[in-house]
Length: 270
Ligand SMILES: NC(=O)c1ccc[n+]([C@@H]2O[C@H](COP(=O)([O-])OP(=O)(O)OC[C@H]3O[C@@H](n4cnc5c(N)ncnc54)[C@H](OP(=O)(O)O)[C@@H]3O)[C@@H](O)[C@H]2O)c1
Image 1: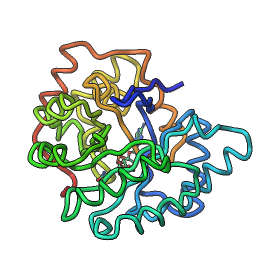
Image 2: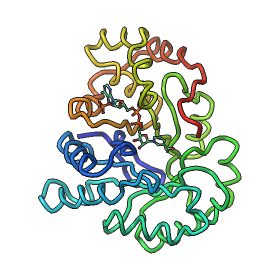
Image 3: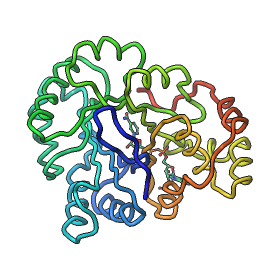
Image 4: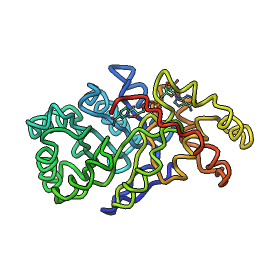
């Protein structure tokens, strides 16, 4: 079973989930069923990914088959900035597409015009029970303090790009000090860039020492920084690896050797 992190509001959330942005159609449903078999219970979607319908369908199928119960699942989605102006309508559509009794966590996908107002619309959903908690994504030092001052339900989490080449060494503790959990997207650098990170000699050396894969070393390094993760994968073998991270630990020197790889290299523009 994947360990959980406790959010400031008392909810618990798996430390590892499945990022779904590349998944569409039947392949999306098949991948979610495979992930559930591996023990994954957290699924990260977004209106922008265009896959909420399939994510919801696959989860409902699994519940109907008795493979999992709703309270064992943790379902996340996000509203995109071009939806902030009509947040209620966008949320209702998202809720309908997922087709679940409630959504565990809804994020604002990016800062943008009308973000506070959109968040306030989502606060009403929390009060009505359609959403359990709210969070942010791609909010950094510049945006976070003024945003937090304007909302009444504190976000539980901030989901940002973090990997060995882009580590956010100052920003991560800043966010954590506000009581928010930090969740890494692109933990391996994202599609097209994983090769560079997973074959870096500093990482492969640690992987060899522990008999683990480079991917496991990267995820373990993030977890030891108290950063939870949503790696994307369609490969059940990889998913199983990404869930087997608690029988080894990097020592201080190994954490430091990965810290040295930070070169401020982002793989996306957010
Ligand atoms: N909030 C935001 O703005 C934002 C932006 C981008 C992404 N995200 C979130 O972050 C998630 C992850 O992003 P991502 O999937 O693009 O990038 P990623 O997790 O960094 O990398 C995914 C790639 O790594 C491979 N992989 C996964 N596990 C592996 C393992 N154990 N060994 C070797 N290779 C492995 C996958 O290939 P296989 O399929 O072959 O395993 C895939 O090619 C997204 O799905 C989304 O949920 C959020």
